[in-house]
Image (tube, rainbow, N blue to C red):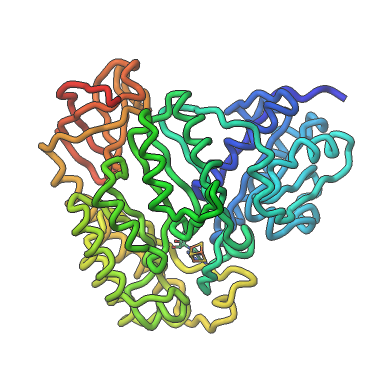
Length: 448
Ligand code: 5AD
Ligand code: SF4
């Protein structure tokens, strides 16, 4: 048996998976000395971190696995192929029936057991562990390694909201929060490695209730307040939020906490009260608008983004019109929109869905055209302004070009030397397209 040396992890899906993939690389570097590679052809261990939020994402898993098998494992049978994430969690052992060449299957809550599973797989025994051993995962991971000036930090796992369309509570389990000190320690470990911005992650992040050392409980606003006291940390973001859990303490944090970025991603899913009820979202369109009004009052430069589902079972033309009206009224500057996809095991999957696919597609196109218009208008309004930008590194295209992010999460490209990476720079925005900005530095400053 040859000793594996290189690991390739491919991530599908959300930022939680991006975080988990990073931790997978940390774990296997420590246990097996595996070096991460971006090139699957040179990897001895190939892991696919999967997503099952919509059917399309799930289908991608099997086409990707088949491609890996053909390209790598047929010629080198010692290559290990593993599947993690939400599809693994949902399918477990069944996954191997459809893709028998898969050697190991692990869930979002068992990445800390990967060293054991990998040993098992190397011994040619199929290794499957998709259990939910709760908080144990975080207690058994090595200290994280930064890969740049920004980092994701998972502060809670799972979701207990059970929106009727959503598979997450079943694949990631019920909510549980990491203790406050664990999260703060992880942020401090990152900042010691040059990280300037963290994004606090959870499926329902404002339900965070972290145990404090003195036996109390900290909410998200308190966590943000404590993290802000870490001098080297310049910016704090969080995602994703649920409107019902969006508490007053968080609104106060937008007013009082300058390190909290002026951006809020608050999924609304629909603008129709009837559909919101069927989705079990627990609020009306008017309640959503009232809430964002209060956040905007606390932080007037707030950029607001959202998620929307089109074609939920029973959605009528009137329901859809209400969604368009809400998108305009809320003034979203960006939105992710999806056609409803029935997920096995969710309550909505049992509802009659008689809207034809073409009607759903046409609605999605109308919605996306509206969002695009709002997004362009928002970007155009930034031209001429000077914005503080955290430099993230060289731009994808163009020699001597850097890219960074504004507080509102928009990406800007500009000319500058690479050592500016990790610094806050004031940039005048000179041009805007729907998704990226161009700018020119007007002097750099190093925030303490
Ligand atoms: N079908 C379509 N979109 C979905 N989402 C979640 N579940 C489904 C589904 N079954 C969308 C929601 C959520 C985002 C991450 O994915 O808009 O906010
Ligand atoms: Fe899914 Fe989000 Fe609803 Fe939780 S709050 S069930 S993750 S859509």
